Image (spheres, rainbow, N blue to C red):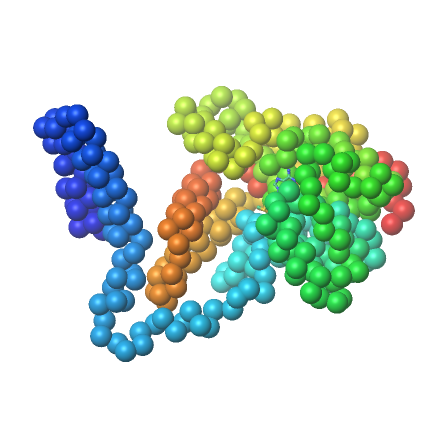
Length: 342
Ligand SMILES: C[S@@+](CC[C@H](N)C(=O)[O-])C[C@H]1O[C@@H](n2cnc3c(N)ncnc32)[C@H](O)[C@@H]1O
């Protein structure tokens, strides 16, 4: 690592020389070439090293054939933070765990109707249909994810009549759902903090619930220290950067206490906001992403530069979130008024 940094620092130290000793178009050209050089150097030093190491061996086959064994498309395409409550579990199991943790608190009955909002590539819809025997309507705003989920569902006979997937936004659910449709349950896993706003979504969701119907969310609340102004300007800046990058409207950032108050004001009953241990959510994901970085290199599986950056940035962010109190992972359960009819 030290050698890598020395090479980089050596290269970067050419920049002042370019700035002071040249001018005009020569200066512009050399600065541009230097920037391109930095990008190539960063890629070679930090991302392409394992691949290069492999090419140096004299083995006839090496490890390239491992790629032939990678199962594509994968059986699951989960995309939530996961609940890493046991040692050694894999990403799909942790993601399923998170859904089970929310659904078990909703006391979901077989044969019920469920609206699953922000369903990703459809894994939670499939779980609700197969394991909880529910009639599922999914809603997501991402076309690529909706298309792939549609393909997965329509290619399986037993799911076709149980799942209906809609491409639309949680920001205005009335626009996408037929006016007469209502649901026994509304679920949203790892998605509600994106909605613009979560509060107007919950207000609309209430209209779409049957009497006694239940909303269940896995969501994020803000640590109390941000509300009482005891955090450093650096921590506040980091929070703002994450929210900007993750498309989280600022009005969605509230503490657990405030969250509970707002949901109660929206006329929901039995409002529960249960904090989870952030190390069991963010920490588990950060460890798994670190492991993935190592194993893709170890087994010679090529990952594009943008995917590598995505992996590294995600790992960094979840590591910080696990170690410092910024966001609190929460499970939210609330019920529409009336006695339960389900
Ligand atoms: C972190 S992923 C969670 C995916 C899925 N629930 C899972 O457990 O795998 C967040 C999802 O929320 C969806 N999403 C974000 N904003 C949305 C909106 N306004 N309306 C509908 N879906 C939205 C994204 O498309 C994405 O699929």
